[in-house]
Image 1 (tube, rainbow, N blue to C red):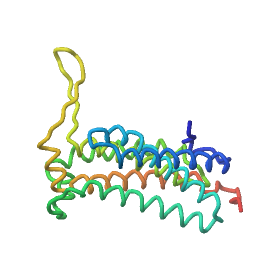
Image 2: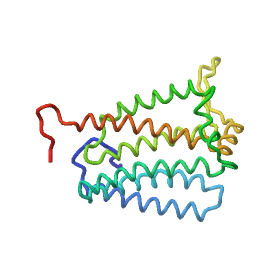
Image 3: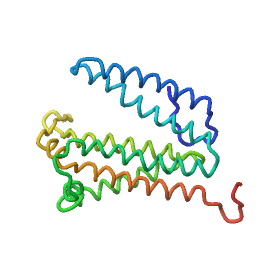
Length: 223
């Protein structure tokens, strides 16, 4: 199983490269299956294609980061942490009929604002707690994990998937709101929501990282 631990400062470059190679092969196989099987079977290929692609990015970028010197490593990590969410946000506007600022940020304002503020507070809280797990040499791994989790959460809303409690059966059931999904796809609203959520998460993680790496009084920073 791939090592997703972000806290250990003693990452093994051999293990990271091995994981990157494994998921590279798995991703190539899943991509081949996805491209050449009938459409009705492509969903099954996606089940392996998406996670293997993300894990290839995760371990591949870690291997690159470990091979760089301190300055280049920092620049590389910042670039990856910023480019990945920008790239993923394009998914939410791929089917948009007309992209406008109001359409992209519409769900983050007006009557939706109180609910969104609660969600932003929870994201900040969980990100702050997760910040304790950040690797000091390769903190971008934790940022990528946060980005992936938020993408999956927004993807659920993008496709109109909702959960509700049944008071009679006392069970939770899911359903798809097709109208909501069509509106999200047409306006690209989840692109703005995704980027705002990632921005809040990244801010909380960055503040926690700076607090962790700040030298204590009387203690000289490590060279």
